[in-house]
Image (cartoon, rainbow, N blue to C red; front, side, top):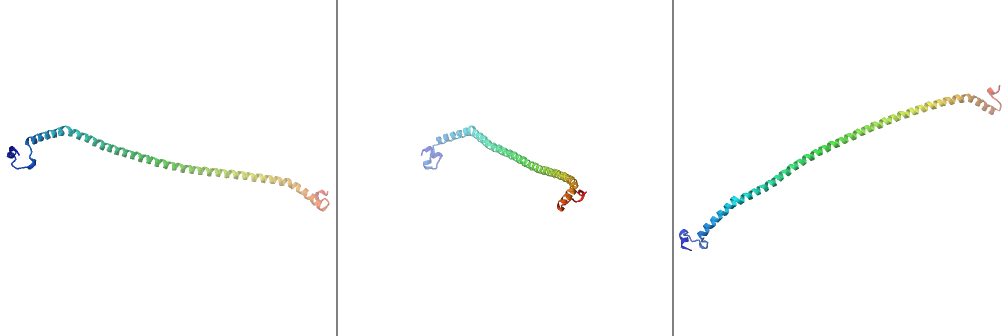
Length: 161
């Protein structure tokens, strides 16, 4: 230990006795380094970190905004799809109803046409029957007399005279 150290520092620090010139030089260099870092480099680092944080948070905010917009578009699409399904069901129902009405109308028309054809057929059959009965009524007498004459063996009725 030097005499100068003993006068300033009367305590014996053992092996840690600093040299005051080196200690002051170290303190000045530390202060200079601290000022350079604090005034020059740390603001740039802080600005870069803030930009990164803004980019991350802004990206997250933009992603949240896009997600919300996508959700709104999906909900609108689902609403339109549900409306389209409802319209399709309504159209199917209308088509089924119209088809049933058309089938019922065609069936009624067919039944009316069938009834008309049957009525015309019955009238034609009745007319032909009357015609056949009139034609046969005149011949029946002569055939009956002829048949009776064959059975009896001699002419009967109008053929006798």
